[in-house]
Length: 412
Ligand code: 0X9
Ligand code: ZN
Image 1 (spheres, rainbow, N blue to C red):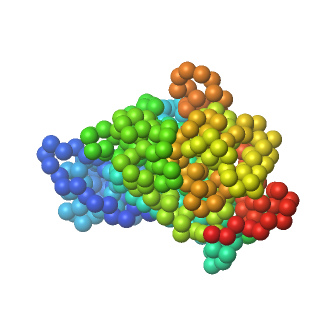
Image 2: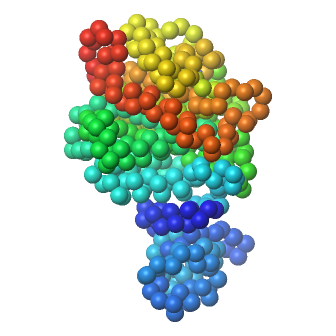
Image 3: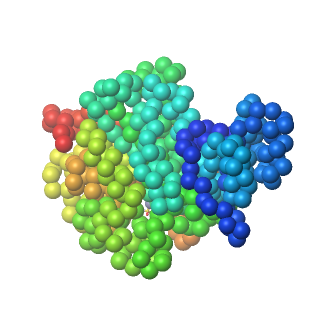
């Protein structure tokens, strides 16, 4: 764990309500982060004597790390304020420490919301199988009128190993807030007139599993326990539009296992419910990696979108965005047929203008290196995708404006 993680931990504790404490067993060696009240060196010494490692000392509490046995003793003393058994040891290999693990991501999001309550709300849209919150940020200048404003949603991290896809939405959130504060007129205008939704990682369990023990696992799916004891459903095959009609697998151990039914997964249901609760959402961008592509529906069949204007909007926008990021625009199925992906559902069911970006690097052939391109790409990839991200937000009021034919805005 990096130093930064320890500092950020303080922020994390502010959002963990008192988490369930496992019952101590002599054979059980679970480890916990604990927030323990202690107001002076004498009280701190009592705590230290119990065997926990005190990592942070504050005026009236400490943050310590220790076993379930120690945790129970501290609880008996009546000094335990909060605890978390989230696996903080899950972290990127040192060379990739610039990426955010789940705890760091949570802290960044929480900090942004806490420091900017007038602009940012944070909401847990679900608890995963392993107990992590799936965070959604909502950014807008006046929350009371948010539903009346055109909305857009950005998502990342459907696939566990695609870590760059988590960094971009996080950076976008920070960029919007910082630029609003700095008085950037374009961003001030956007934040005032748009309702912006950002889910940096849809799949926190998978993402953490992928970096467990600081070595990459090349994991793609979530961490659902399947009926036969295998793990994981491909979340980008689990959405409920033309689910299971091609390019997905019924084999539980397959990388593209579609799940036992459409929307069988906590993560996809959470996204579905969230989008359906915000009927003002008109544009959607789902980040994946890698291959440098801009993809749009359909993905489950080779035919183009039936409604000519909808097809034209997707095509026109994709082409425009490719001018900025240099990615290749194409229909999803031009890559390969796959059913149950996010964008076929969001467009197919809700007529949201929807894109998948396959971020850098380019498709370099055999091997998984493309999923782990190093920290050096984070900033340049954000920069080249900033204009596309803002463009979709600008046109969220009426994406058909790109056609210049005076078609009214989407209403759902
Ligand atoms: O296969 C996927 O889910 C996406 N590619 S990835 O390498 N990130 O796994 C692409 C989905 C595009 N959609 C369809 N082809 N339907
Ligand atoms: Zn992906």
